[in-house]
Length: 185
Image (cartoon, rainbow, N blue to C red; front, side, top):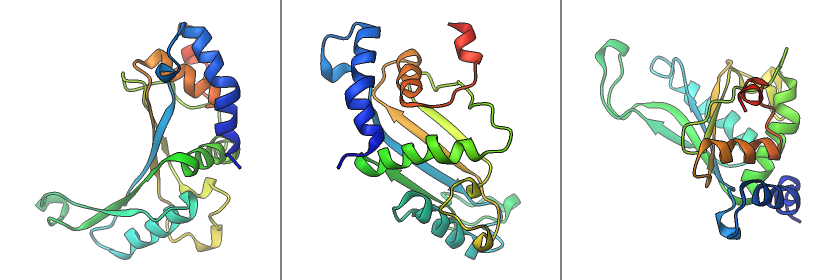
């Protein structure tokens, strides 16, 4: 059975985007290709177990084992040596990507206190990055087992050629953008 958000994309969003932008080739319709979740762990230099704890939480959230990210060069001011673990990341594709996006948009983001939507700034090539300040907004994470609050960056990578089409794709999928972008258009 296909993920719910993928079915919505195939049934409704594709046709809507094709009509809105006058796209004749079905392969040119903007679509989501991957979601990258990244955690840079604060305090990883002093306490190496923080990276393992962050990786465990990210694995629970995404359903996929993260890769540990190592520092590329030494920075003496931060007491950082080359090849020290400083974070973790996951690249989600296909069904896992759609399931994670659905849980993020329908369950996790509405759990943020005083949530008024996400910023509407895309990167110029139709991709969107969202920053979260803590991992506890995901229902899979138990409050009792959190060692420390850790933020993360979530990047939605699309095939959209520009920000307008990328915004339209994400908006149709249910991304709760704040009203700033709608006021400009």
